[in-house]
Amino acid sequence: MKRAVPALTACAGLVVTLLWASCGKPLPPPPPGIDAKHQEIAALWTQIRQWRKEGHMARLEPTSAQKLLMRYKSSTQAAGVCPDDPRPKTPKCQDVCSLANAICENAGRICRIADDLGNDPWARDKCNSAKASYREAKKRCCKCAGRLGE
Image (cartoon, rainbow, N blue to C red; front, side, top):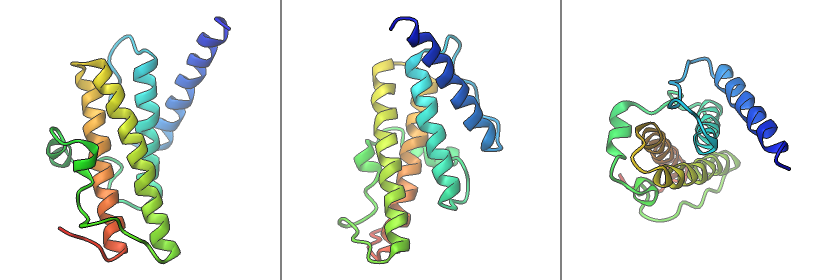
């Protein structure tokens, strides 16, 4: 089993690298001495970027201003764009809302890992980016379902 861990880690690193390359825009490198937690954040964050692309969001990455707004907000606060839970009725809106929910799950995982890493600026940036992506996706879901509160 101990031999499988380095092989899996190398494989995960290769997958993350390939996913990054497929997004078209070079990503900032993780901190030196990447470990399993940084690799997991990178993989989850890359998945969010792919979902943003598939969801036809304006950019692959939230703007610096959007990330800054999320700096002191929890994932729940980041999603506070609807007065209540949207209930999408059309298949298109169901897809938009499913995408928001998937981004939410990844954002939560990224931020929990970033919390575990403590004062890690790279991890915190990915958390803020994920929360901003979630907010944007949730806003699109609410708008599609006719429940936008902002």
